[in-house]
Length: 119
Image (cartoon, rainbow, N blue to C red):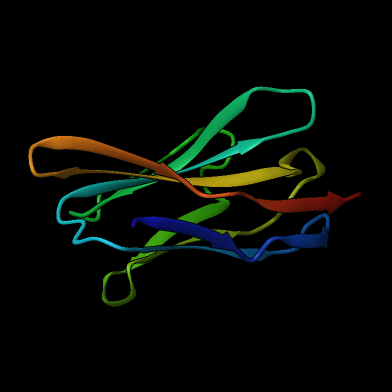
């Protein structure tokens, strides 16, 4: 059974940093895309960043230059380093794993981790 588990959220002051983790287990993921999203109170889910199994990374304009996505292939874990945090970064952060398995697309979400940035 595939599981995707986020961790690393918390409360931080404006200008501070956090590192979020997203650990995937339960399958041989092969070629995949891991995406981070966030959802602020009263707003829709917003895409933040992605990394592929080929280590291609892209970022939303709102976080470019402040957030860095990376992965540890040995542990099937993807990280999101959040630097120079702003109050508007406050949200629940979710990771999404998409991969192909036996010819069918698979899509899994984690439960989310709360990031709160105080001004």
